[in-house]
Length: 348
Ligand SMILES: NC(=O)c1ccc[n+]([C@@H]2O[C@H](COP(=O)([O-])OP(=O)(O)OC[C@H]3O[C@@H](n4cnc5c(N)ncnc54)[C@H](O)[C@@H]3O)[C@@H](O)[C@H]2O)c1
Image (cartoon, rainbow, N blue to C red; front, side, top):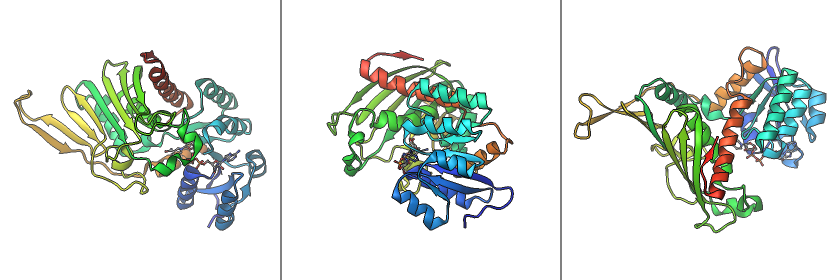
């Protein structure tokens, strides 16, 4: 069923690829909203729209003008986020822009300015921040629950199948885990630990031998003085990545492991299992540590993101992840690329 009933938020989806279809499925399951239209030039998108009885347009400008949706989700390739976002801003349509907000900090600022000038809400799809696990971790780490934050360690060690690299751009510079996957980890660290001040990085293509890196090691310095390391590779047979451990997406068969570790002066926290390690009595390496599992109410972060977007469209809430915040995550991610290329430390 795709007909709208009174009070439902009419959301258009621009770009019906992997994540666009995920959003369409969520909208169709949510009572609060309805898919107003799909805009995507491919025959596959036209068939999907026809199957589901959703108004279809090949051209997004034509769609925005004809349908006048209450809100739009921009799930196109990265290079189109800003042009589509500008078209939404011009028409006063609140938007949920997929990550990364833009390809460069400069173009991101253009979009933010246009949205501000038009008074249009702009939410960015760093959806993991809607996960009760990351929210609990932020509360504990920033609220002093583990004492003074000293270190964080993040692992993104995953095996992309060889067929993933049949598409040429994925073998070329920019197609690797630093620009595609690390942005999530950078955003997780910023959200949970605080603002990042410096990055250093080394990358390697020694496993696959493509022009793009398959592996990188990153050192992060926070404004609060804590240090983090992130190790990422898309050529490792391992369960230690957020995707495999956090149960957010059934595409990735879950393993009950952790992939983030936060160390503080009073205790340590491992995610996504939310295991809290601390001394119950006297502190010191000769004393026993105990582990407690922090209980939370689990929820699907993509569903929560959509519910929030509906409230943003209605003017009931301000965007939880603003354009400025997402631009900072983009800037840090681009700084990691720069640090790896030049072998230097980059200050933000
Ligand atoms: N939040 C997440 O976890 C997550 C996951 C995957 C992708 N993404 C982001 O979402 C975006 C899309 O990624 P994807 O994996 O779904 O890519 P995809 O290639 O599967 O889908 C992109 C879609 O956009 C369509 N498109 C291209 N030009 C268009 C145009 N002019 N007008 C309308 N549609 C157009 C394509 O035909 C395609 O269907 C990227 O920015 C990516 O970084 C986010």
